[in-house]
Structure formats: C-alpha cells, structure tokens
Length: 187
Image 1 (tube, rainbow, N blue to C red):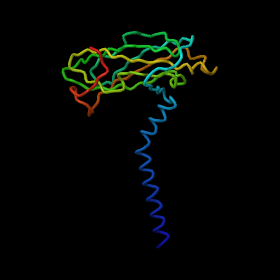
Image 2: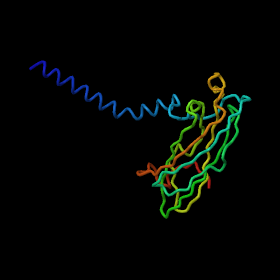
Image 3: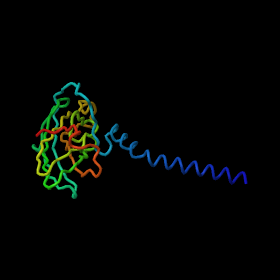
Image 4: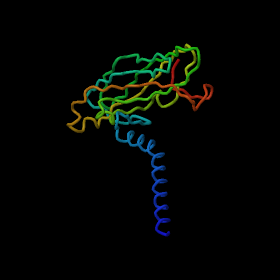
C-alpha cells in the first residue's frame, strides 16, 4: 500500500509540474523570442544611444489586417534607407471602415530572421492597443534603428534589406477605454 501511495504522489506532482509549465510556456516563449530575435521578433529600447556607422540597410514596410477586422492599414512609405545606429521614423495609416469603434493590436516581425535581433524599436503603435472610431483615419509612427552590432560579424554581411511587417488583429476584450487610453497616434 505504501508503494502505491508513493507512486500516486509522484505522478500527481509530475502532472502539476506539467500543468504549471503549460501556463508558463507562453510568457517564457515570448521572452525567449524577445531576447534572441527568434521568429523575427525585434528588440525594444527606451533610447538609441548607439554610434552611427557607414553601412546602410534598406528597411521595407509591410502591412496586413486580420479578416475579421474592417480596417484599411498601410505604410505611408514603401521603404527607407538607414545607416546602422541611425534612428529612423516611419508612418503607417489606418482607417476604420466600419460603423463601430474597434480596438486593434498589431503583431510584428522582421525578416530575414537572422537580422531581427538587430532591429530595435524605441517607439511604436504596436506597444499599445489602438482604439479607432468609425470612419476615423489615424497616422501611427514607429521609431527604430538597426543596431551597429549587425556589422560585427561576417555572417551578417548579406543582410542588406530588412522587412518590418505588421498584422492588425481585433481585440476582443480591450484593456483600456478610449478616454483613458494613452495612444501613440497622431491625428
């Protein structure tokens, strides 16, 4: 009887540990992606304190909208040429085509994946939910730089172009209401 009890406790402990790992896996995976750039995840910084060097990268801009979100979303420029370490500002425009206020959030990635860890955003509309009123058109900035460390190793010499891609999704349960929301948008 003692051996059976010990086995039950051990199996229960393993099941609880697996359950806890299941709940922790999403935040751990997101943190892993943010640190390593895995899957095209970019880095985030408060300020750009890097040195500008004389290597230029062309950054293309891409935009997508989930099928259930009646928004028009596009970059205002197709690309920008930026020196490594130089801050750059790009704008995206979104328009709510529906007759209701909708909250959206943007997911992003950078390709090629091996260049993503060097793409750093200091300000971005993707950091917060965006509340867009019916028919409202909003210009949203993204401030970024490409870390000069991209130039530190020969294996990154072929990274001459990068694409910053966003996809907007509808937020089912918004965290903020429009009056309380501090938006990163310009009207």
